[in-house]
Amino acid sequence: MRTDLDQLLILKTNIRSHEEKAIIARVFDCNDMIDFWTIDQGDIDCVLRVQSPSLQYCDIIQLISSLGFTAEELE
Picture 1 (tube, helix red, strand yellow):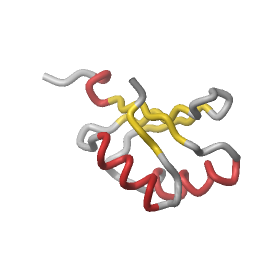
Picture 2: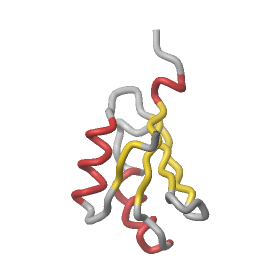
Picture 3: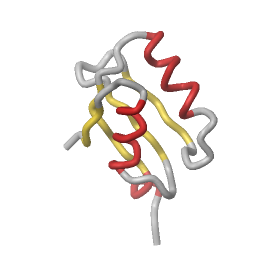
Picture 4: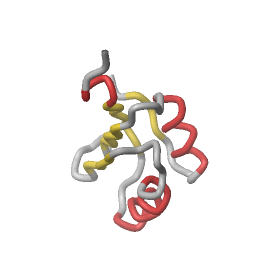
């Protein structure tokens, strides 16, 4: 049985500006596999949190990369 924490993916990104966040928002907001997402641009790692019942880290990294940004699993 999965819990909400099992569905939470936490990544380090290079998404720093509000304009860059808007690019991500256009894609993430219309993705049915993403329940909720936030990005902490005040954090040095620009931490992206994605809640999804089906996506894995590799899926989010690939999506971010396709938009011209970098992401990696935050340990």
